[in-house]
Image (tube, rainbow, N blue to C red; front, side):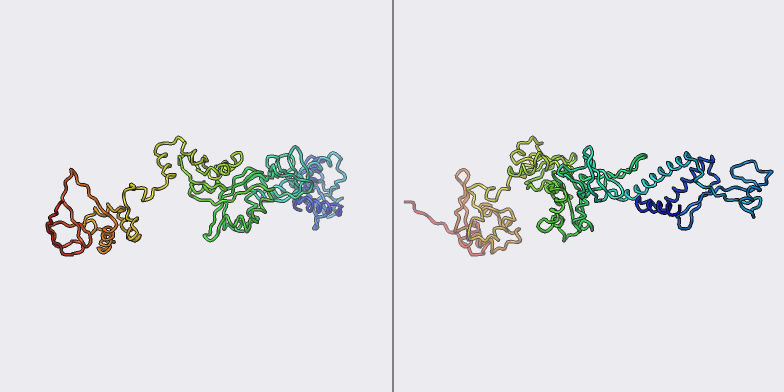
Length: 484
């Protein structure tokens, strides 16, 4: 019996993964159940294993009482009967009386066997549950066994996993004994039946685990995955960011010549994966989320309702929307905004509020150049070749762009330009006197005569004896002109 029992214990420990202590407890429970079935109670039953745990004995523990006091109680034995079993016993001693399980009737043994089987199943289920519960939300590898009603059953070693039809990618097909990598979605221990290990290949976390396996920077958290959205079998978008300024998160995920992302895509049977940079600025995040389309503008319509319009060129519209709207639909999920994609013309035709319309139109209206801000008959300082661009820029800084604006400046106004020297002002006057004729209109045909310094061209009046600009001496004389 010891050989048979030892072999049975080793088989349960090695093949079913049940601990030896639990196996011994089950054997003990089996014997106690048979004892109780035969004697009505197991309160005085004792089970003992040898040191090697490969042999077991069952005893009935009974108290020795005087023959006159013995009333047939299950836990007592008369002194005279006890002497037959043990010559040195005395009244008051407890005697362990061996019980041969072979003496149990068939019903007692059958009942005990059923209880033992159930106990073993429960123990095995508890053991497997404890083991696989730790694998929940992790990756696991198994082998395709069979398909039933669309569900795929996968051999995981000690237990069979289930890959439900709803968790399968439409791209994938399997054959007998194909190796399958899966995400452990849920482990269920039902009251009746086998342990259930529910697997998935469509969960976003499945993609995340693949990234962790293939990209060391994600595994060590140098790069973090902000969010993953997916339509299994068709397209996945992954937003990433770096914890290091010197590390490009998108480049690291894609890998040299795309080798890293291609490895992941092969595992997903060619499903398209867009890796893009997460940005805390929603406008930039929306722009990135619509990749590979190039977005011209992102206009927030309602920040509270999280609605926005992405404006693209006509050539980018179909790319931004994607086949059957897939690209923009995934972008919506990724950024958690409602994004409408429009071309420039479509956007301008939208019925927007006046303030929004005004703000948006300014985004698409090119800023006018300095030349466009002035009438065609106004000459700009920048159009005079002898004036350096540096000097023109100084006057532009003070909002002086045209020749007329410069000429109309008073000395007091010019003195306020601290970054422009008197020599520079004088040089402008000299250049203007050579290139420009300034004609002043006289209201009602009459106006006071205006004079200019013959040296620097600065405005002067008859009461001046010295030019206020170049300080040359002045004198005024009346000249009579003969009109013939």
